[in-house]
Image 1 (spheres, rainbow, N blue to C red):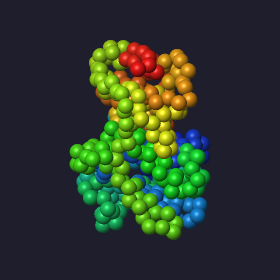
Image 2 (image 1 turned 120 degrees about the vertical axis):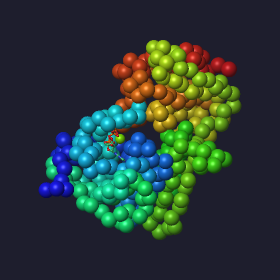
Image 3 (image 1 turned 90 degrees about the horizontal axis):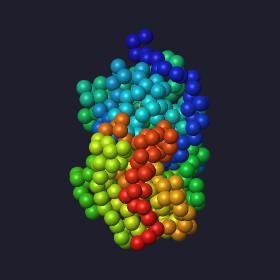
Length: 345
Ligand SMILES: Nc1ncnc2c1ncn2[C@@H]1O[C@H](COP(=O)(O)OP(=O)(O)OP(=O)(O)O)[C@@H](O)[C@H]1O
Ligand SMILES: [Mg+2]
């Protein structure tokens, strides 16, 4: 058949969903892929469709997915990444399988820059088919872009948003996570949107409520004392193709936050961004070899940029540095040398 394609490694949907991604990590994966496709405007649309059911739709204005790439896009492990945290060729499939473990409801609509519009939907299978869409059906996409959608159960929605008591609180926590995860790319609070690299809008509609639109701005710490620096010489074994922009010092704790900058043990220490995306936070004892006090307002925020192959590696879920990578060791040593005594001063 003309419109069919065969992804490699299928029949493993249940294995892909076993990774148990947090809800925020599912959304982040769609955002990361959109960014890699040069998207600058992303909308995350979340609607509560029943007491325990939600629909998620992520729309981007990137360059879309071309039909000749479908085989690769849907294969597990086809390497196509150009950003530091895109390495495995798995993220999209793992995120979809986590959103929709039953392999029933996920859908992708995409438009490429030459105007070709395609639809691919569940189930993920050994042999899949796409449909041609009339561009009129994708009016929300202008030149090009992609819409990824899925139904979600409550357990998926709540995963990783524990400690909250209502859906409003869960949305507030999700907003905080997104505002911190992409802080270097999002507009600052008082900045014009045009000056930033990325605009993310969250649209949230509760079951019996009005749609709320939230334009995400960067959530950054408020520093009390800070050292600001830039280094491109000593981070990874004197490799000048990696450079770091960093700030460290004491912050004004924000105890009203759910997760970040709280001035406590969990949120204090090192926060690492790779190509503008948070990949780990809360590293302390491993670097400075001293006890992480319960109240701790010390923060070291570093944004690493440069050649992908030279940057420290992170895990497939993009939530932690890969501790067995020697570049990670070099980098953590650089942090320690840049700030030998975090709790003084
Ligand atoms: N929103 C999107 N727009 C355009 N292309 C996309 C989009 N999402 C995914 N793709 C394509 O699908 C491919 C597979 O995505 P997937 O997330 O599985 O792997 P990856 O991003 O290359 O690596 P990783 O495992 O680190 O996420 C991408 O490399 C990209 O070519
Ligand atoms: Mg990906």
